[in-house]
Image (cartoon, one colour):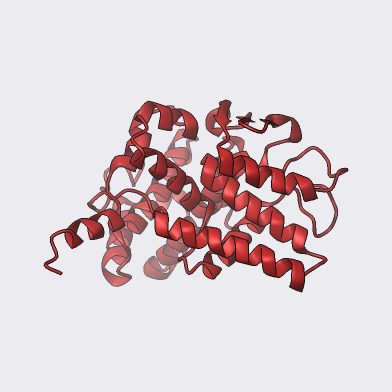
Length: 307
């Protein structure tokens, strides 16, 4: 990694940006650096980047690579963040990305699981647990943990980082209700999220098999018996596996969070309550869940189909 990006990474981590955000920025910026050097035949450095470079890179992504508008705009956002930081720290005099506009796009709601897909995921999880007890008697606890966490995320809407930061004294469960306290939410804010029946059942199923001396974190690794907090990468791998079993395309923690929010909106829960549950400080962030997603549009046109 070039020194400029290494310094930018240090800055992002000091700002306590999410690990996925940091890695996404660095991946996109690494592609920009490679394109810059191959196109211009010179070594990349912050002061030599011009607005023309940023505009040409936008064209390269849009026309030559045929990237989707959202992907192009994500790359431009990474470049803009880098250059804004560089100007603020005195490394450049003018921000070359400031006047470069993103690619216009029709706004769709975020990808989420509809009821049929949620049913398919639930069935795949149950089937996985049944088979794991027979096929993997030494590792079935791991399968139970992964199953419980997937259901927990779907029914609480917690960010992955929030869920993995939970400790054993951050939740309360009784037969009829439950509550989890998020102490390390985005922006350092804390909030309390009630647990519905499915979330409570999933949590209790995990607690029944969780090692008693497994440290203070709620979700822990089991493979090495280290009692350390479960890693985000392990969760992502588990969700991909469960999603594939359910016939779903790339199941991620974000998709589960979006599905929780969409379920609330579809149930006519007010945006203020949805925002409070998700930990949004701005209602405009929550409004994306009342924006139709691609599946909503597909179902809409089917309503006027003659068949």
